[in-house]
Length: 337
Image (cartoon, rainbow, N blue to C red):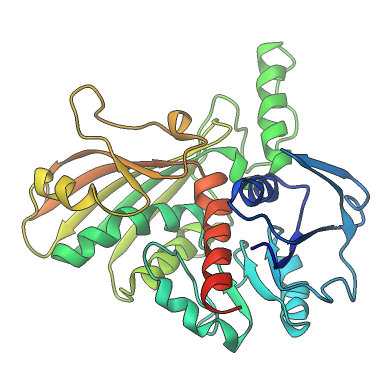
């Protein structure tokens, strides 16, 4: 990366902060690093490790002489500026939902479908999936290859960090207000989040599923290459600052005993399997800061033929977003730029 000129868009956000930290920790830091943001954040000082830089304004011409642009902003910013960055000659990695379901843009998890990157030049853009789809794809890809799936049922429990820095501050304030007897104030979520659970991430669509649930299922199918995989997903926002937990129930094509599933999962890249009596499962809080997706409680589901259940936990900001973007960047630099 030492000869690569990198721009990070949305540089003052939580995910961008993790991206910058990871870039600084790599063996070779980028040769040039440009931080870009909105009029609200332009001029702000960003400090991550040894990095100290001002955020510059995202404006026409800002991608001149940039080799790689990592977008850690929202879908509207990506819609407006990612094509402009690609047209200026930068390879774009977008962490928003904007291009995840675009058939002309590869959706990539490097440990699962790195070959999909070969199509990145069609638009000059690579999409990174949601933390939900990323965690599921890493945990399920080895099993899908071994036995195949008939059906998948997932419930997710997401901390507020995936909604950004203001959401983290909002949970903190709501919790403080309620503990101080000040009652409920305006919340950033559909309902109060402090001491509560909200079964809604995104808007509720006409048939009852939310936008996040529908999109996460399609993302998972794209990454795994299983376009027709029957999947039901319920996403719940929980009063946790960081982390993501997923309860996963599989119906497989052929029987898969839990000990065999553990044997298949243990050598898989990007995974840590918890399978001992002393360490039967991970929790989102415990794995925050870990670069791996953690799997535990692998067990039989007797309610269906060939049923298997497991629990997955990951850091939804680091492993589930920033790390995937940096790994995509490293593959692009190594093989394509």
